[in-house]
Amino acid sequence: YLTPLMRVGASKTLDADDIGVPSDEDRASLAYEVVQKAWDEQVEKAKAANEILTARYEKQLEACTTEEERQKVKKPKLKEPSASSALVKGFGIGRVSLAIFYYVISAFLNFIP
Image (cartoon, rainbow, N blue to C red; front, side, top):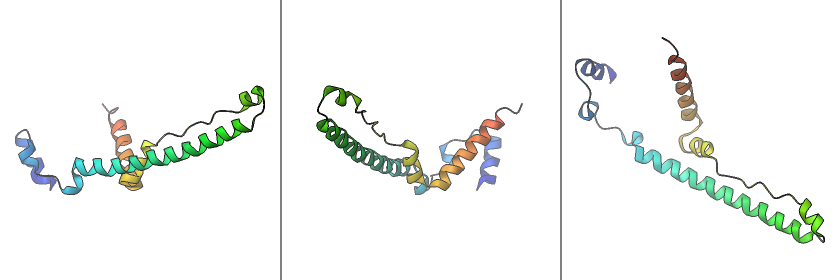
């Protein structure tokens, strides 16, 4: 697939017609839908965890009888959705690891004169 494309690219600047149509698996809209679904799951998971933490905190406050006791009760650290977890869930650990590997190699190659 790449050899004919390299030949054309050597003789002229490539445009969209030279490259062709990407497969359905490689389309950005599919990637967006997959990651959006995984992100929505992360948001719901964080929301559910935060509701539990907030309920526990409020229950501890209700059990306090003095203002000093109320001040000693620590506010819970609310959880945030994880973008990295959404990417791993959406694309799989293999693809994410490979992308990180390519990124690191690319960064190292930028230092070669």
